[in-house]
Image 1 (cartoon, one colour):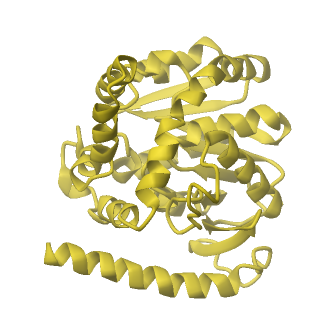
Image 2 (spheres, rainbow, N blue to C red):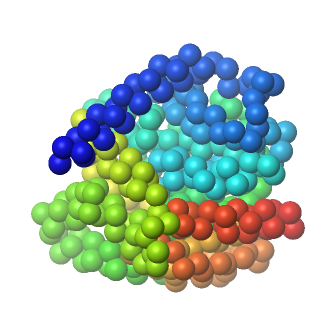
Length: 323
C-alpha cells in the first residue's frame, strides 16, 4: 500500500513538471526544424478551449499515422510502436479529454460522448494541419475514428485496426457477453461493479496480461500508469459516463460498414486473439465489406502492442508500402 501511494505521488509530481514544460511548448507545434525526428516529443495544444496532450515522432513530410487510443489507457499505449515507426512515418497520438495528460473537465463542464470526442479530434487534426493520414485505432479509437472518417473521407488514406470493433460479431468476447447480459437484465448494480472492476488494478492487469504467455515481457509501467491516472479526482465519473455512452456506437455500425464498402479504404487488421472484450469474429468481419484488407490474428491480449510492437510495426510498414 505504501509503495502504491508513493508511486501515485511520484506520477503526480512528474505530471506537474511535464505540464509546466509542455505548456511552454504548446504554441510551437509547427516548428520541427530543430527536432530529432526519431525521438518522441510530448506536447500540449489548446483545442476548443481544452488542453490536449499528444505524442509525436517522425518527419512531418512523410506519411502520417494518427493513433487513437482505447479504454482505459491513453497515447501511452502507442509509445513503443511509435518509436519503431519513426524512421518511415510521421506519427501523432493524442489523449482524449479525461484520459492521460489532457484536460479533464467535469461531466458538468463537458459532455463526454463518443460523438463529441470525435468532433474534438477533428479540430485537433485541423489545428496540426494534418490533411491526410492513416488512422490506427484500438478499442475506443474505433468509434471515434470511424466517425471522423465518415464525416471527412477525403482525409483518410487507410486504417490500421487493432482490436477495434465495428461489427456485432465482435461483441462476443467473454466480458462483452457478460456485460450485455447485465444490461439487458437491468442489473445496474452489476454493471457498475463490472465497470469499476475494469478500472481497478486487478482488472487492468487482466486486460494487459490475460492470455500473455510470458508476463515478464509486459512492462508494469503500462497498467500502473493507467491505474494512477484513473485514481485522480473526478476521473472515475468521467469514465463511467463514457462507458454508459458506448451503446450509442451500435446504431452507427451499419453506417460505418456502408462507408467501408463504398470507399474501400486500404485496411490492415492486427488483433490480439485473447481480448476479452472483442472476439476474433470482429476482426474477420471487416472482410465482408473490404476488398483490400489484411487480417493478422496475433497471440496477444487486448493491449497487443505491449508484447508485439515490433511485429505490428513491420506489418504496418509492409502494408502501407503496397498501398
